Image (cartoon, rainbow, N blue to C red; front, side, top):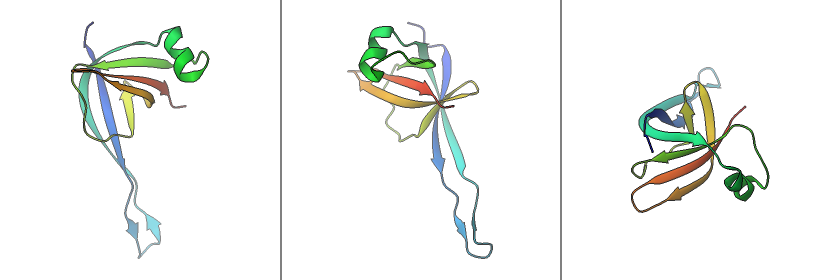
Length: 100
């Protein structure tokens, strides 16, 4: 298994309220880059997680546990949401689906 794909764990912070204008400031996205093994999700795993086949589903393996909170994952220009996470003894895996 090659850990050769950069993935970015994104944390979204909502903007503060500005009482002078009555609007909220833009949200801020902070990213943490990790190297991971990224592959298409197998059909058996899709049956377990989604109850059927789903387009745009990937499986991501990290060599270590990622302990910081995050909202979504970016790979290249695509954004993914985590549908299932599994922590093994030293590794962590995610089944993710693309946000449209």
